[in-house]
Length: 148
Image 1 (tube, rainbow, N blue to C red):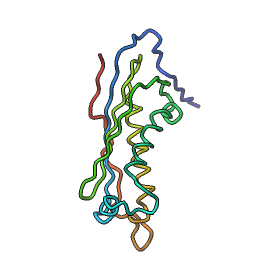
Image 2: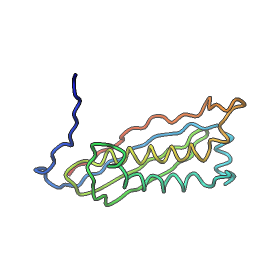
Image 3: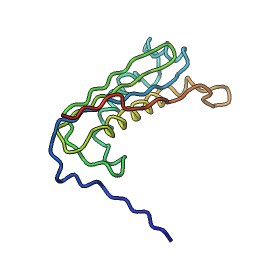
Image 4: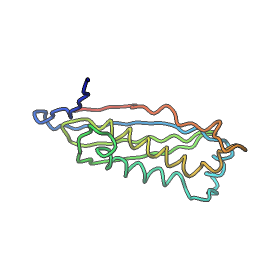
């Protein structure tokens, strides 16, 4: 029997430096759903405001979600939400003076924001059979990393 073992990386000897990461991702939605968002017509409320709040909360919860992430003293979380014709894009920048990077915090924030948008818009995205034929969360990635 092979046991799989995990461990957090030892960062005790690393210097504290400025760290910043920006992550982004999109959720593809029907143009009619985007129109409802622009008009403030969703029953559950404003997904743009909710996504921003969810992103900030997710950064704080990253070590509880990502098993090997270190708890960090995040100094800045900046979510930006943009609406397109058939998509919503969330970009989150996270910064801290730490011994390890903040990429996982930024990625977790984008993921949580997009999931919250899905939750608020799902009633408008379903087809006649209750499926989501065109709704998709996609292209979640780190777009920038700074270490100095």
